Image (tube, rainbow, N blue to C red):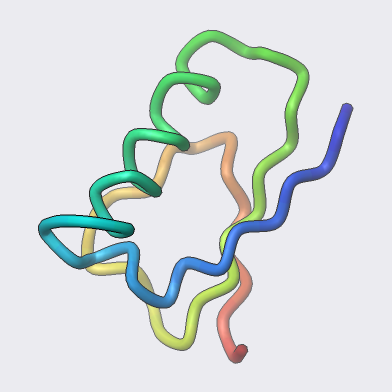
Length: 59
């Protein structure tokens, strides 16, 4: 597995980087690409996170 860490502080935004981040996570998580995604957040995400994605709180 290849680890990928994403700064997700703006993931809940409707447009721009938030939209890009949500879409960037959805496709690989759905298809099992061999990538291991981790989100770095400052609080619990407001939107659902794919089950295969780890969330680290406390950036």
